[in-house]
Length: 246
Ligand code: SF4
Ligand code: FES
Image 1 (cartoon, rainbow, N blue to C red):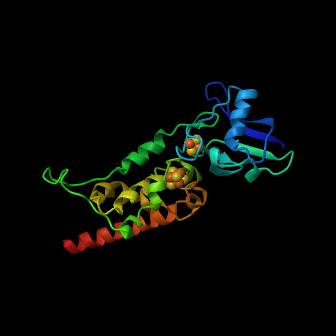
Image 2: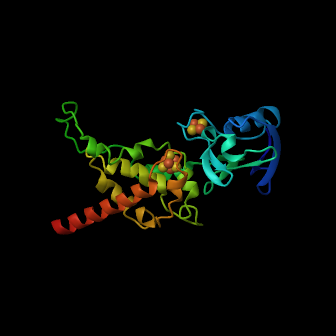
């Protein structure tokens, strides 16, 4: 099958603005979009910048906008997009993050927001408890955050979110809340209070307006909006409890 792959190209040091470049390629319907990009890089244009690592939907490094929607290039087949000779496959970098070159985006802001929520288990253990205690967990508790553990930090949700992408937005973004919720619903964690200044803020969970784009594009099938809304409810309960304790 012969298709056109239209790639958004941009080299900030030499180009005044991003532009589309078309490549005609012979592909099989079962080729992955990542295969197509690597074929172009190998046979037509070695200057094409594309990031990938695992090639199997695990590392999250090849998230990009394919025919208008955030997807992993390594998990998207040509036949998901193009089915006939002459069809066009469009490939653009993620939105809302600065383009470093072609399909490379600068992920620093995304990971800075991720780190803000302290995405690790927080305990108040005393030294006496360390190493002497086994933390058992009931399956029904694990189910409260199991979905969120699937996040691969690909930033697709961030790219698709109209709030995170609004000009001057400081919203921490869907992925950061997913990561926070992975821990705040874990009964071994004791760090809700440490995370509240970031989560319970106008740029935290409350900035989410339930557009559901994040849930639609997440390549891991995480119910992102649901995780955000459950985190909102948990914060409200924590506030009510602290009001009662006063
Ligand atoms: S929640 Fe889904 S879309 Fe967002 S970073 Fe994690 S895996 Fe990617
Ligand atoms: S290359 Fe790792 S997720 Fe696609």
